[in-house]
Structures are given as C-alpha cells and as structure tokens.
Length: 188
Image (cartoon, rainbow, N blue to C red; front, side, top):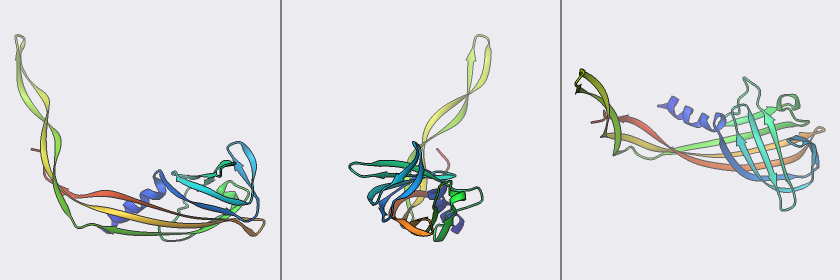
C-alpha cells in the first residue's frame, strides 16, 4: 500500500503536472529562454511550472512581459516529494543555481465501491457455407470496483541564485486527486 502511495506522489515529478504560483524577482538575472539569453527584470510574475520527465518549463507573465525558460533535471537527480533540493547552473542548463524545498501531504477517502461498465471478449461459433469456425466477439458487461480517492496537496518554494545571491523567489502550490483501485471483480 505504501509503495502505491509513493508511486502516486512520484507522478507529480515524472508526469506532466502544472504548478501555479508567484515569482518575485528582487534582482534582475539572466536566463536562457526559448528566444535566447534574456534578462528577467525585477518585479512580480504570475508563474506556472510544468514538470516534464527531465525538465521543468517555467512560464513568467505580467501584463507587459512574458518569458519562458527550462530548467534541466539531470539523469539520476530527483526532486523529492518532501525535502530540500539544489541544482547547480551546469546541472540546470542555466546561468544560475537553484535551491528549494518541496512538501507534499497526501490524504485519502474511505474505500468505496461502484458498478461500472466494462467489455470482454467471448468466442462464438460462426457458420458459413464454407464451414464453421470460432470468432471473438466483444461484449459489454459490468463489474464491481473498490477504490479510494487520493488527494496530494503540494507546496514548493525555490530560489534562483545568481552571482552568489538570491535573485528571485518562487512560491507555488498544486493539488490533484487520483482514483486508486484496490480491487475489482471480473467483467460479467
């Protein structure tokens, strides 16, 4: 059971999850954006982080400005579900270092059950003037499924460190719910 919960939490990092938040830039810094090297000016940005398998896409927006850059996550490096993390400029593929913390809290409902539709294959005899043979036929049926809903609330804080000092700070949160099937009957 615990392995199942850890796997559900890991989806955040390896899947394509988005996290919204605020990026507060105290001191302008350079970033390698999709349009080349760009200076990210001081100010507060509405921000989304999109976690991919080996990178995080950072999208910064204000009414006047938009910028997008990626932070590489080297093979063998993981952002923990709960704990601190750090990436050097060389690891991140950017001209700045990153340091942050991540906190995930999971809760789940009591187990529930429901009857759902399903499909299965049965074999029928089929005869033609050339002879009889068996053919597969897809049939709709029902099954009982027992499950619970797992909700993960995540808070993340990270700092952009340029020239040895904190240039920007991100705070964000996300929440997602997944249905975890504990067991189910055969389709009938």
